[in-house]
Amino acid sequence: MDLDIDTVRVARTRADCVLRPGEAFLGGGTYLYSEPVPEGVTGLVDLTGMGWEPWSVDGAGLRVAGTCTLEQLVSGPGSLGADTGGPYRALGLVAPCVSALTLSSKVARSATVGGNLALGLPAGSMAGLFASLDAVAVIWTSAEGGSREVPVADLVTGAGVVDLAPGEVLREVRVPSAVLAQRTVFRRASLTSTGRTAAMVTGRTGDQGPTIIVTASVAAPLSLHARDHAAVDHWIDRLDSTDAWFEDVHGSREWRAAMTRRLAHEALDELVSA
Image (cartoon, rainbow, N blue to C red; front, side, top):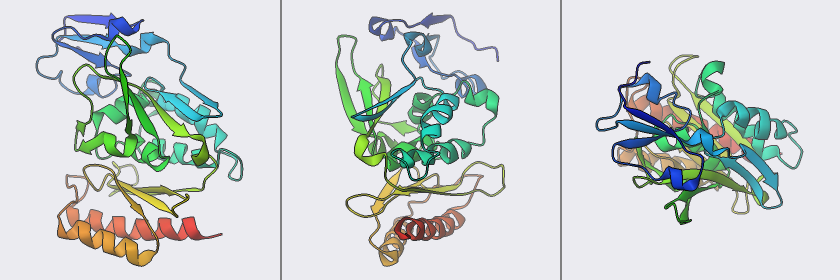
């Protein structure tokens, strides 16, 4: 696509990440290249030049760089979760969450974890994935070394609205080690087999019992410590009463609500089963 911009800078140091007037950050660029250039953007700063290690695992847990591609996420952490009884069983959630984006292999080679999170789209499944894994986002706030952490469950606050100030960089997400061996669950609904995700429920076991995360059918991730099916129904009923459901051409509010209720019950059954 012919982007109507004047400059592209490749960031190689933290100082390079300071935006000049009219600049915006570029990750994989798959969404940016498919849409008109946002008003006022005249230059791009390519974060892939920072050379961040895509992912790593140590005693503290899993770290995933903002520039880690979806392909790298699946082939790396996703492969660790292939052993459903192993120490990384929670990472079995990676592959289905990436597949929920219904993207081509070409896009998967370029699209990044940070880009998907920073877009804040209801169907952007990286929010559901990392919220379910109790991850935090590490955000660079200044070139001088300032940073802050935000739970991924709180990072997206609305449809296309993210807790990122202008000029801040989503450096990485961190999954605590205690979560990596926990059991996870994935459910998804779409109007068509290859259509955009309209309701997604992810979850995991934990010290407080099962945790369920709802995305796609709502504007921002919602979580519930699901004690039992009655708690799920009470929660869904409350969402109904506050008209919290997201609606677009990929699904009506009523249909998304019904699908979310069904998927949440299925997810709870799977999490509590032996």
